[in-house]
Length: 138
Image (cartoon, rainbow, N blue to C red; front, side, top):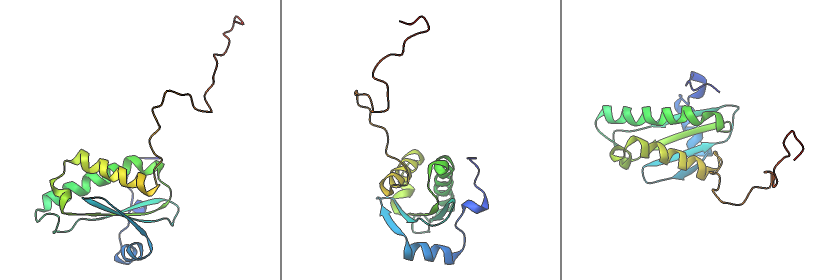
C-alpha cells in the first residue's frame, strides 16, 4: 500500500467524528486517546488536537503531522475502520518519536496491529527443525 494520505483515508465531517465517538470503543494513554470504529473497507484517520493541548498552533500542527506520518506508515497493516486520535495536554510536552510510539502502542492494545514477535530462542512451529540437504545429497 502506498504511503500517501489521500482524502479517502481521512475522517473529515463532524457527523463522522460524532458517530465514531458514540459507537466506537476508546483506548486511552496518558497523552492520547484512540477511538476506534471497525466499520469500512479502508483504514481512515481523524485527528482532534484542541487549544487545550497547546495554545500555540505550531505545536498543535507538529503533533498532527507526526501522527499523520505514523499512520501513513502503519496504514497497510491496519484493518479497515475509522481511527480517531484525540490529543491530551501531555502530548505537547512529548518528543515526536515518543508520541508516535504511543500511537503504535495504542493500536496494538486495540488489536489493530499484531503484537511484536517474541524474541525467544525456541523455533516456531512453522520453522524447519533440521537443515535441508545440499545439492550433493548430504
